[in-house]
Image 1 (spheres, rainbow, N blue to C red):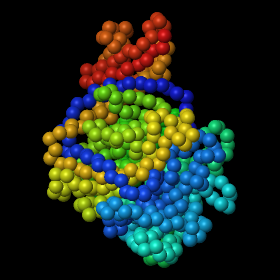
Image 2 (image 1 turned 90 degrees about the horizontal axis):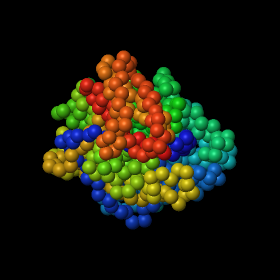
Image 3 (image 1 turned 45 degrees about the vertical axis):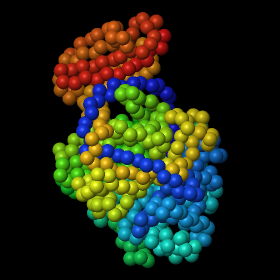
Image 4 (image 1 turned 90 degrees about the vertical axis):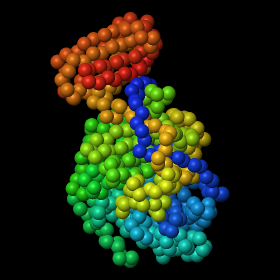
Length: 535
């Protein structure tokens, strides 16, 4: 994660105001270990006959802050890894027999990738370039014959004839996603990062977000790769994001689509996006009526669709987020820490989206830059969304989670020297459990509520700003009270705007330091947040 830390805005606690929903399914994760399998994160993978082909990625954890050590060559994955999760075996082969251009591309990190039939297509990625003696975003598309390479690696045979590569400036992207709707490929958002990463404010690199959805058709006859670029969709406000989750969808119309969830950074502040972008074959639409509070960074995601209810479910596993739950309270941490949260975002038949926290968590601060690797024999649509209604067992093994960044603490960005996090070697089996009588999912009302209250700065010295949204013209009451219920201040606001409103209260007595409860209430909704006032 290439992250520029902004001025700390502190810690805020939002009231979850959640109620439990009978879950359409539950999730069970079961750890398993494969002997000799090392840690890896931000890699690409292909599948054949139940086996995985793992390409690229990093052998270390969160990139270090020291410029000379960040994304160093020692952390490159220079091997092809084949894994059989059923027999729990693994095979490896060095990529040194390939050309330098292939070696560099296939040992990069944060590539975009998609498998079509036997071929895994890898686009872009960030890594070391020998010609410039520096790191760059590669402009390559590499096609890999997955079955042939898997068989060669397992047999210890040559695989050099199973790779093809082309170059195209449009493919110089890292931190985005490569997806497909019908016959069209979508290279979504991301950035072009050239030079050596340096968080110390020195100009050792250039970074340009694509702000775009780059569409193209790919023709592959097994020998030649032909690219036909289609018109690009550009949006400097809403597609200015990277390191997000792009998840294949079945839309309420029954058509295939893609939803872009969260990602970093907003154009005007170094914080994640909370909204999402829905893409279909005709274009895209930004959904600002939904806000995602959990799982803001790229992590393992499980997509499931129920045709009987016309509901699309997306389950996110851990990672990094601006918010997390603590004993029923939604905690805001603008340092954007590592989290354990497993959450579900569901779109109903009317297209309305809502977020739910599951009762199960990742067993550690784990999940960022991990991948969900599906079991392809489980019923699914052509775009890899699982057919939930076709699960015939109470418990169905739908896939695995492998790797990702494991952190020793929630916030290690300021002190990271390489010892505070690592690439995980852990594999988890992921089960979908139906007909379960336990495990309620908590609706995060902030995700669908129109108030969307924010307070900043927090902590503060009695002088702060409250932002909130109104969808109706209504009398609005604002209360400030102590944690034991004593009212400190109470105001009734009228003639407010439909849309965003700002209120600027001040606690006059600066000696009233401590924790307070701020409440906004209208005739139709209510939001509560804890604030910290310094003495």
